[in-house]
Image 1 (spheres, one colour):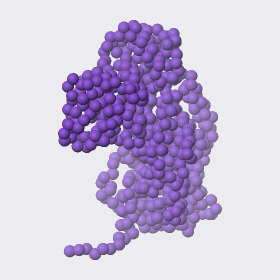
Image 2 (cartoon, helix red, strand yellow; image 1 turned 180 degrees about the horizontal axis):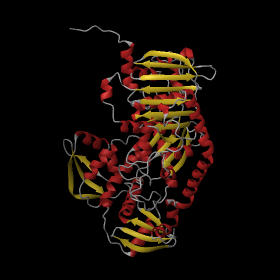
Image 3 (tube, rainbow, N blue to C red; image 1 turned 135 degrees about the horizontal axis):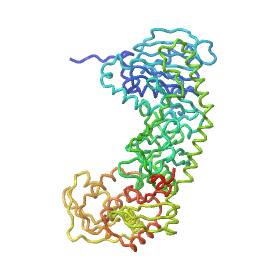
Image 4 (cartoon, helix red, strand yellow; image 1 turned 90 degrees about the vertical axis):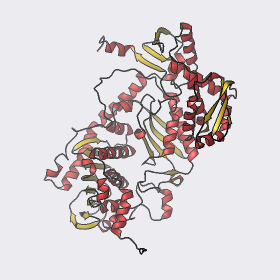
Length: 605
């Protein structure tokens, strides 16, 4: 029996829409902070309890909402940020779809207190299940406070799949910190279960904002970048290759101030770090991409964290070249340091002592107006007192960067001057003394880099020498891999591999680059195929990947070297440009200063 087609009621429509807009408490926090930013707030307070599942509060000192618009603000697709479809081509605000408040109200108990500066009184509005249950005039500070309680109380299916409070807190912490980094001119205070997690100064200084949120170790490893081309500008910080993460959570990207997650930008960043980081390790970065709004589409998904670019290949090359150039000029030599094994460095600073305005919030007899006014006042007081201190800290770290870190470029330029060979350790590491430091050279990684550079140079000069295999190697591939190899067979040929089809999904390898010797097996070819399938943006990197994977076959570890061989290795290293890493990202060189050695022997304090 056919059912009649009918239009869903508003409540059902809002709940369906909320499934896209409100993925969890972190989505609520993001939308509310972005609304506060769009309202020109200079102070924002974010408070959550139990991972935001039971309580979320976002307060700001922005423009507020006039009384006659308060009800309209909770209607679907109601917004003050665009007027028509043409406005989508020139969006500078973070919000514009007009879905957030309606979606949040549909799946929670929500309260809003708001007052524009020119309005003599504030408005308090309570909603449950999308319906207004109370509205009245009250005294309130300028700005808006929104309190969201019991998220998904009326959608049991969503509530059942809610993650743990700890997991939701982690997501919220990420969102708040990212939005704080995107808006250093706004003071943002973040409170979790009555504990102040961080407070940013709001003075426009990105260095101080970074120090407010992340640990000092990250700050010391950052390199500033700023580049512009064809009305596109990239600015911010990238990390030294000595600072690595296990995932890309610290690859923080903003497009015109909007926090986004974009695979093209991630790929450009990570390709620029290729050969500088170990496999499956990622850099940290805080990058602001400024681009004309008509060259991007931010109306891809209700969360607005996904954007599309008009000129993807050109943008990829711009980001890739900017980062790679900065790294080649600023890469430092990794330093051996000794840490207390029990020391744990948190990713977010926890500052519980700044002030405790909200610690007894629910037992407080003060009015909402008094609490908010005092909170905003205390934010300003704290940072007026501490700005000089923060400036001093930032300047101190900048001095450390300049005075105690040796760049690989300066080391290579002087490596042949005044060095002394101490010996060879474990038939793998060369020890040399130079100036007031000891250096360990991984001879296996060094050989691999030298072979890679030689093979790459031969390729660029169309001068790769090949050798015929005594026994041609037959490999069976999946249909997908076979089609890929056949498509790029000329590229493999230029790099010294003679490959032919040998029947259905089978290839035969007859020649390999002479420098490889006789490969032990050809498993590396499968690694090449897997990595190259995603390398559609960068032809140079495509070729380098084949060489990088191949040259590993030419290296043997645990070789005993004579003094003359060590001298020759050092001479060869002195001729290569940074990075001093093997083609797979492992360091060739580590240093430890005389000061560090004597400090650990307790000869100095």
